[in-house]
Length: 325
Image 1 (cartoon, rainbow, N blue to C red):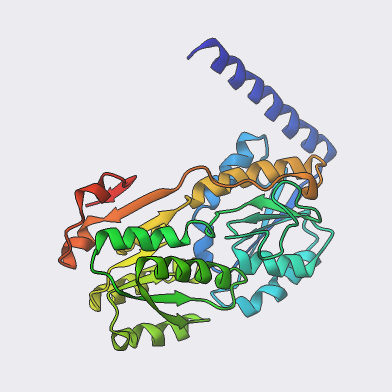
Image 2: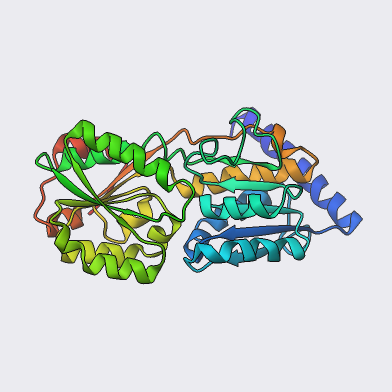
């Protein structure tokens, strides 16, 4: 270990110890509310908790979490946000545009750290990335800006691609923006989009059972927490219908989808810990710039490609950050 790394480690340990000591002496336990559309959003939570530990917080002593999940029913989110407020949380961490929207509507005083909105400005969550204003800040996943890229990657894998089924959850505030970009990208690639709107897992099940009627060459899921939580079902049906698929999250590919392109959720959760820390120390959310991911990963499932009878071009495999075999 070099001298600078050692000093940084020791210095960080001293600071962390001081933070914990001060919190314990004051007897204060900060209450952090976590709001999300689905329990699947909790998978990267260890990254958030690890980030807070590194900053000196001890769960159960200096911080405590209150979790609320809508079980893939966005209509429940306003009520769950109200529950968190009644429980007197000090801060709300909200994952996904539907949850962020619910938190924004529920309070303009309790700080909200947002996780993963596709376009926080376009959806009206913040005034600007540099100066969010109000009580909301956090980390964007920048899905608006890369949504069309997913179609490009799918076209690279399937040069004859001409018709794609797009799954969209219209209750997601970012859905229209994401679909518009996807549609614009489709036009430039000469691809026809067959849109299927689904609001709940029950609607999703019906939609998946009818996909064969769309006579499509592939499937794209417009980024939404429900398509993450239902990833196994979607991957299974896509395989049965022999539809190559592309997603925003690598978890969908691990479940059997063909490919994904997007920010890594775990990285966003770790970034969120720094926002929680700064706000609990007195920073105003509206003055903390919204951060955007700097790394996007392309993940390809070769096992799925083989099952579908596809040969992924070497040029595309060479661009992949992760290959599942």
